[in-house]
Amino acid sequence: MSDLVDAEVAHYPEFLRDGERQSIFDQLRDTTPWEQHMVRLFGRSHPAPRLSAWYGDPGATYTYSGLQLSPQHWTPLLDRLRQRVSILISKPFNSALLNYYRDGADGMGWHSDDEPELGRDPCIASLSLGSERRFLLRHKTQSNLPTSQYLLGNGDLLIMQGKTQHYWKHQIPKTRRPVGPRINITFRYVHVTRNQEAQSDARTQ
Ligand SMILES: O=C(O)CCC(=O)C(=O)O
Ligand SMILES: [Mn+2]
Image 1: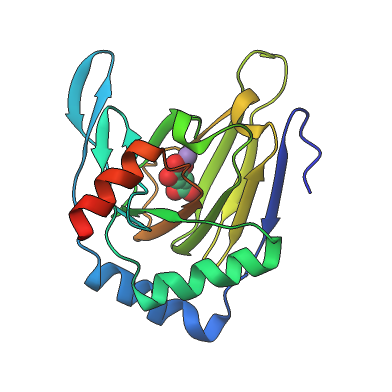
Image 2 (image 1 turned 135 degrees about the horizontal axis):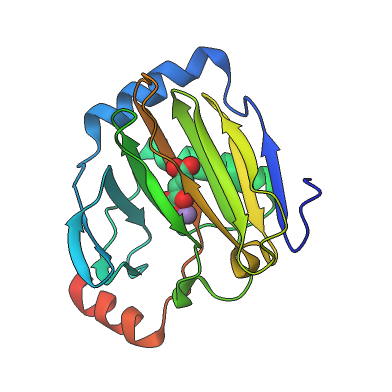
């Protein structure tokens, strides 16, 4: 566990075994229906500097940057990874956001994973594959606290829980250094409202 104030962050380097990482990366890169979502920045819509896909249980709809994402069905691979992470930390997950950073020109700006459907004190489990990238955390109000950095390498798991999303923002900065592709999976638990459940029942009947 890190010693960051107002946060619970834990880094598990090499959570995935050396012998499985490449094939997991290849499968995710080649079989995921990647899309370039639009994101809103200062009131304007832009193509996100990365490719993404949303997976989850039926009804685990997620609103992200003003977008309503309906989940793809779990693949056997993603379901197995979800179970391994769940067993390690004894937490359930019903959805996953996949992000594909093709090179250093791709990244993700400062944000918190604090959408209302994630509820209070969400547990976010982030699994990284491929090239190592810097992951930064910045306190929202205490500007005297230094930015905290984790190097997320191939097969690493990072858990953020407790008050982390309330007090801290995080980002994957773009870089001019030559870096290869990276895929990140964030497992999340989306609280499905009754209304969404009814909609999803209606669709599956
Ligand atoms: O790529 C990462 O490590 C972080 C991804 C992230 O912050 C997110 O999907 O919300
Ligand atoms: Mn995030």
